Structure formats: C-alpha cells, structure tokens
Amino acid sequence: MKSLAITIESVRKAYGSYVALDDVSLDIQAGEFLTLLGPSGSGKTTLLMALAGFVRPDAGKLLLGDRDITRLPPNKRDIGIVFQNYALFPHMNVLANVAYPLFLRKMPRAEARQRALDTLARVQLDGLAERNIAALSGGQRQRVALARAIVFEPRVMLMDEPLSALDKNLRETMQYEIRRLHDDLGITTIYVTHDQREALIMSDRIAVMNCGRIQQIDTPQRIYDRPSTRFVAEFMGEANIVAPGSVRRIDSAEASGETLMVRAESFHLDAKLVGRDGIVLEGTLRAKAFRGENWLLTLTLDGGQDVLVCIPAALAGGCAGLATGQRVTAYAPATKVHPLPGASA
Ligand code: ADP
Ligand code: MG
Image (cartoon, rainbow, N blue to C red; front, side, top):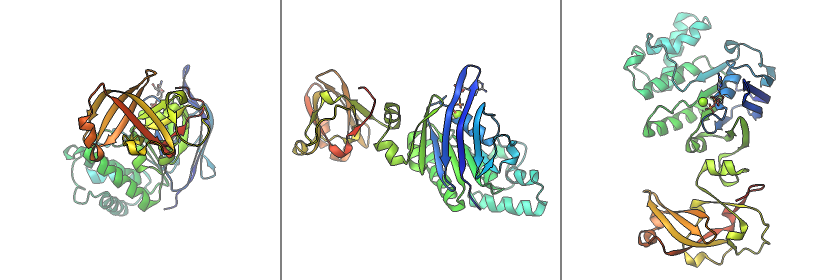
C-alpha cells in the first residue's frame, strides 16, 4: 500500500461570523502518524472534515500527493475515515459492514467477502463476521469501524476521537493497536483527540490547535519539553510559568529576564542538589495530594504565586511527613527550565 503526503495550505472556514479555521497550514509526510490535539471547539473536526470533503473551505488548498483535492467529492479522495460514533449500519452484520466500501467500489462479491474476512482478522475480529452490530461491545464496534476504514486500502486514514467512548483500559489497548496497524500498513494517518496523553503515546508529530489555529507542530517530546506558547505548555501537562524574579538562578549564565516554564515533575526536594545549575524556589506548602504514582504539592511563593511540584511516590518517603504550612525548598535542573518567549507570568 503506497502512502501519500498531505498538504494543507492556508485553509480558512467560517460559520457566519465565527472563524472555525483561521489560515491553517500543515504538511504531513507520507506514512506519518500526525495528531491534531486541542480542546473542544478548537476546529479539529472541521479540519478533518475539510480533508474528507464534507466541509468546503472558504479559502485555501488541500493536496494529496501533488493532486489538488480541494473541490473533489468525498468518495473520490482515496481516504478512509473513522468517526467518534462509529457510524456503523445497525441492520447489517459485521461482515456486511466491513465489505460495504468494496461493494460501493463494485468489487466482485466473492473477492469482497474474502478481503473483508482478511481485514477482520487483522483487527482481531475473526469469528465475529456473522454477528449483529447490536450484539457487539464498544471495543468490538470500534474494531469494525477500523476494519471498514482500511478494507479498501486507502492511502490516507482520518480518525476523529475514535476511542473517546471506550473505558480507560480498553482505550489504552486500542491506542497501541491503532498505532501498530498504522505501522503495518504504512498508511498516512491524521488522528484527532483532545487527550494529551493519547497524543503523546501514539504520534510521530502533534499539531496543537486552539481557536481555529495551529499553535505548534512538533514531535511529542519537543511539544512537551519545549512548548512555544503558554497555551501549549499548560495544555500538555502540569506547567509552572514563573517570572525570573521569583526564583533564584544558580546557573553560571546571566539571567535573561525571560519568563520560564518548569514542569511540576522537574522539581526535586533533595537539598543535596541545591547548588547545581538550575533554579531554586522557596515557598510555603499549601496543599499536598497523594495520587498513587506520585504526590502533588502546591507551594505558595513569597510573591504570592502558586507552584505545582510533583514528586514520584517511590522517592517520596519525605512527602508523607511534610506538613502544610511548613517551608519547602524545591530545585529544578537547568536542563528542565525552558524559557517561554513572549509569555508573561
Ligand atoms: P473540535 O472538533 O475541535 O471540537 P469543531 O471543528 O467541531 O471543533 O468546531 C469548531 C467550532 O466551529 C466550534 O465552535 C463549533 O461550534 C463551530 N462549528 C462547527 N461546525 C459548525 C456548523 N456546522 N455550524 C456552525 N458552527 C459550527
Ligand atoms: Mg470534534
């Protein structure tokens, strides 16, 4: 199966006076797994539906390979789609649902049946071909939707929050299965989610969206460690945005005066570390919460700002003994202190 690059060029879409996509540009490499990540209402579905052909952009261009598909009808685009609500046909059995795209493409019956059975095996649904959709669990329905999207071997796959209806354990299993399926087929995939962990686990690159705009496109690690905006920093995890004046820098470098971003889990309470390159802050322990794998501490700095500090439970013998109201010193190494250009704390 040959995969295809996708180019999105200055795409704009407004609903009345509301701008759902504001000049969005994005290049997706052939074979890449790219995730659109953002809060509800940020324009993820609108962008996906524009690619699928169900939303017509007001301006801009969409290319598959070097072919302009901006005005092509959905069924001519060679794109497989998996929606959030599965959109399966409830009156057909599993096999008929999966074979449906082949039937639309006029494949001979026997060949379509065999191809559908092979695809069912690929998503581990062998043996359920004759089952009614109503008699399937949520996870099984999701696999049927997946099989139906890949059965005609599209060169691009679009998935809109396909796992959001599943419970946590099944969702995590399916995250790995979808990624493995992508790797096996080499199919260029655009995946939509509002769940930052899911995006981090599954993606080659993540495009973070907010208010109809792409805020940052990068690898999961860079998005997490080196966010380019305050929005990305806070959306991706527990981030502290601190003014340079509220911390003590003990690195040799001249303090740049820039606002700093430090993730909660980058802090240590070990006094032996203080003195190495990095930052030190002192505050009063205002709250502590045990979260199973770690403790979350809230320190109030003398300037009044709250800072979140996350300490692994395995290292946190000391945390159980900490009492609210006491003074706490926290240290973060220089490698974990990221300047946020243009943000004010
Ligand atoms: P997301 O998928 O990120 O939650 P959407 O792309 O569905 O966001 O929606 C982006 C914005 O556009 C939302 O504010 C939504 O209310 C609005 N919107 C989406 N579709 C329509 C429509 N058909 N008519 C009017 N507004 C719409
Ligand atoms: Mg959506």
